[in-house]
Image (cartoon, rainbow, N blue to C red):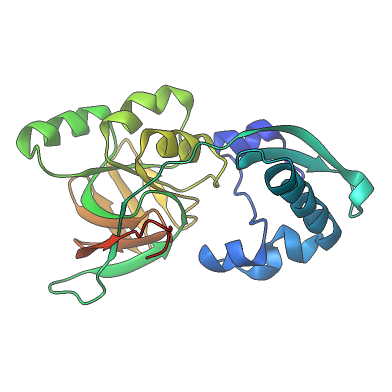
Length: 238
């Protein structure tokens, strides 16, 4: 609330969930949602979306909006565009029956991909090092936030974990379009790129340590989680 579009896209602020359902999925307080705080704005926005998609038969939309008060008359559309949808015939989730040492660390906002495990990296040089040493090992780029200049690192890594940002931040949009697993807005994450390490829930994660992230529900674990594959049915169910 009270921030500009550039602040949101750059990841300088943590966005709030639109609906109570979104808040529950992202393990955040439902009362922090637009639906709870500004119900008239929420229901008007929802009606506009239904009109565009179900009545006018538009594709699913990414909608940018602003509002200057709690009433429907205070809501303004800035722009809307077709949403890029990546179909997945297979999805991956964590198998919570584990062998060995794994530890839950925190929740962020899952914005892209499913569950994955890999080595934490903090720079392009580290990515190149591990690609040569262990070509088959997945690599997860850890950042406080991202800027457009980080596109090379995001492209070369397999996953992305950031401390800042929301589902509309630069990191989230780029990771989604590149098909990367991504968790953003992990507020407890303190990234120390120069030291090639980060702190999360009183744990220090160093370059090369194994971590696991879930780009669907936003969980972050220390260690290598077991991953199970779930076949998606043709009707979109599981």
